[in-house]
Image (cartoon, rainbow, N blue to C red):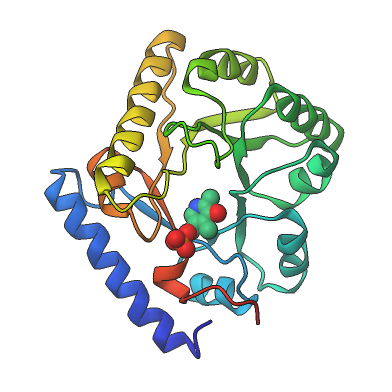
Length: 233
Ligand SMILES: *Cc1c(COP(=O)(O)O)cnc(C)c1O
């Protein structure tokens, strides 16, 4: 973890430059890609740093770990869940997260809808798609995305804003790139099929954000490049 806020700002500037360069290379409008700092395995200071730099949203991949930090963090941080969710944690998740990006099966949709009804709230979600067909990654298969979205759209408490994917780890950058292209094509197909927008494409991390931006990412989830290696406390 970083020593201080100044080192965070240095890293943030470097990452932002990388994002801006990729946006230029992709011929996309300025500001069309947002950054989601990923604070998992880092102390709560990581989210406070982001907030102080004007970035309210941060990503966490475990519900339990996030809950502890949500208690401690400064007012105003918005928490996004980017890791696996079990339906028995759905209530906590709906109470605590601003958005859940890792929705990948009907059972979770049912559980989130029910909890959102109980709490009388609406919840933003993304559908996680395993666009790289990586056996080590969660996410619905591309072939199942249509049925999953159809079911998601029936849940009136859930606002489906787009899709999320994690590319397979591979030295060859073209592997990640084709995974991201596949997610974008899947989104375009679904948007047309259901006549909706699905604006958010959450794809790209420290190692592959350039490829993701070239393929249309609107949100890159970055941990290591902002906070250094993950060693908890
Ligand atoms: C950890 C994590 C990231 C960030 O990964 P880095 O390589 O540290 O940038 C992004 N997305 C998800 C889903 C993660 O679990």
